[in-house]
Each structure stands twice: as structure tokens, then as C-alpha cells.
Length: 288
Ligand SMILES: [Zn+2]
Image 1 (cartoon, rainbow, N blue to C red):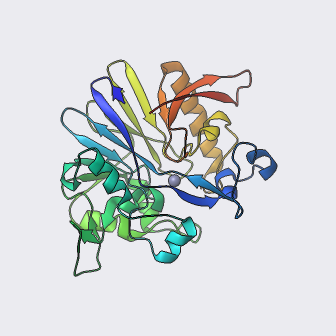
Image 2: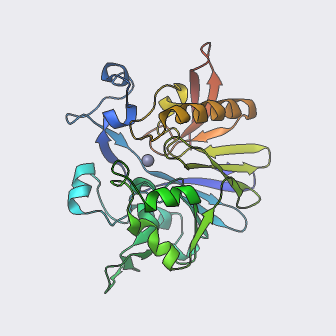
């Protein structure tokens, strides 16, 4: 998709399946099953759409999916198929590992930063089992508080924060720690959007008169943006999530912002419109 002077591509790291209850938290299944039919194990299908932003000077990748370091047991639990999914899709766009200048992690959950690091280099097995940064030239941008929460997880959060996804970046001198809202280039900036995690960040892309907002897990699926009270069970601060979504919904409507979704298997992006209810919105999907 051409967007002012820059181009935006969604690059998937593959689909996976996860329990529907996690995505909808307190919402009863009789309600959420009307918008998504679960499989026989009560699971829903998710995509891992990372965003590639190509400016005249830089290639910026937002999030890196699950990557290839999961155990066979973890992969089977998620029904995650194939290897080098993200890297293969980047290759289809003509991009190799050396072509990514900047990686932005919305947060450090395993489905968003697993591909930050890898155990192999150029297809050859490494002698060491220590992961290395997947993109050798890239600077990786992470919020300070997110890094702190990931580095010192508690009993509830430790299952999704894996050190191997971020520690090798620091060791390689490729980690840039961000302190709050930060402009990264003329067209790209990040804003802290708490709720899913305490320092989740969204990416704002502004080019010409157009604005896009990559939502990450602020709204994993469009329905989470359409209904403010629908909050995933994963969110660590659900009441804060509601306020974050309310602010972003008003910002998106007032400024005609293209919302980009990371996890829905079909709806990639769209424009939000108000309804007669203040806590509900309607998304007009857009091909991307
Ligand atoms: Zn996620």
C-alpha cells in the first residue's frame, strides 16, 4: 500500500491457534462466538501481521512474530506451521536480513518479538545455542518500562516473556531503549499505549496528509476497537486498556486515521466511525 511518500506492507510470520477465552476475557462465549467461530478445542485463528514501513531512507519492521525458537511442544500447542515464515515473506519483497534498519517492538510478548533473534545465521547451524539478532544491521526499539517488566516478570507474566528474545540485542549493542513517546524518523513515531502491558507502544505513520496507526495488542482484532468493554484476558491493566482505546478511537475518527490490526486472520486495516452508542464504534475495512 502506497501511503504518501512511503510504502506499507503487512508481512506475516504465519497463523496460529489460541484459546478464544483469552482473546475475549470476561465476555461470555455466547456473545463472542457470534463474531468468531472457535474450533473443536475452543481455539480461534490468529495471524501475526508485522508491518514493514519503507521510507526513502529506511526500512522499518514493526514486530517480528513468534520466530523459530519455540520448542516442538509449544509449536504444536499453537499449531504453528513451517519455519522462517517472516523471513520468507520478507524475501518475497526482495528483502534480506541486512536490509532492515530499524525494528520496533510494540511490546515483548513472545508473539511480537520471537523473531528478534535466531539460532541460525544464513541457514547454517550455529555452534553455540545462544541466539543472535536476526537483523544484523538493525537497531531494535523497546520501551524502557516494557523491558523492565519483561526482564523481571511475575508469576502471571513470565510465561510470555522470554529473555532470549531481547537480551542478545543488548549484548550485540543493537538495543535502543525508549523513554516514552518518541519520534524515530520524519514519518514514524511511537506512542505509549498502556493496558495490554504497562508500556505497550503503538506506531504512528504520517506521510503527506495521511496517518496510519499500527495498534499491536491495543486491539488484537477489530471488534476490540468497536466495543470498548471487550478486553482480552491477557491485558494486565484492563481498565487502563479501555481508556487507551477510547482515546485512540476519538483520535482515529477526528483525524481519519487508518487503523492497522496485527492479529485478525482476514481484516487487516480500516477506518473507524462513530455509532449512536458512545462506547461502540464501527470499522469500515480497507484492503491492505
Ligand atoms: Zn499479540
